Length: 136
Image 1 (cartoon, helix red, strand yellow):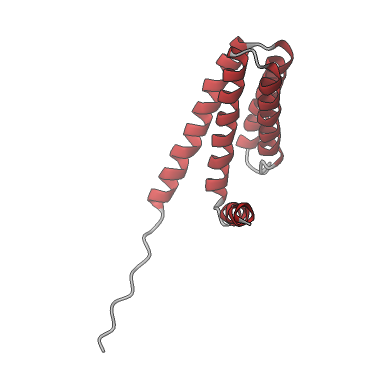
Image 2 (cartoon, helix red, strand yellow):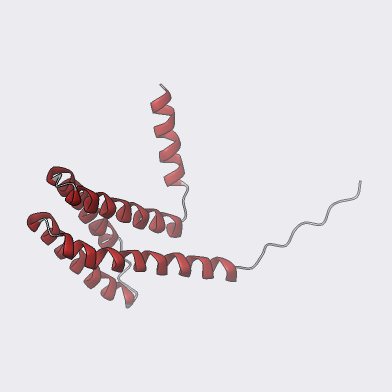
């Protein structure tokens, strides 16, 4: 019963997130799985490494699938996502720590860029006027 309530809370949290918050959550999850993959490769736990790489590829595919193609930057992001997916395939198949070491900082930098952009947008939003207290 307790697990079900927690699951409902998680689903409600995700469903009420702004697109910016959801994007950052996806990138945080992606980085988390990349770290798991890296640690598993270090321990030579190849089954866990492959699972983490697969999950990372799935997140990247989702990010690519949800790009709004009306904006020119979507093409650049698509190429980046394609590159990341290809390289993660190399990591998975070749158990290649070096390739993972090359793309993980790139993905983290992209995540940080989105985080900075989100903060800048939030700072530029007008502050809603507060209603004057009514005297009674």
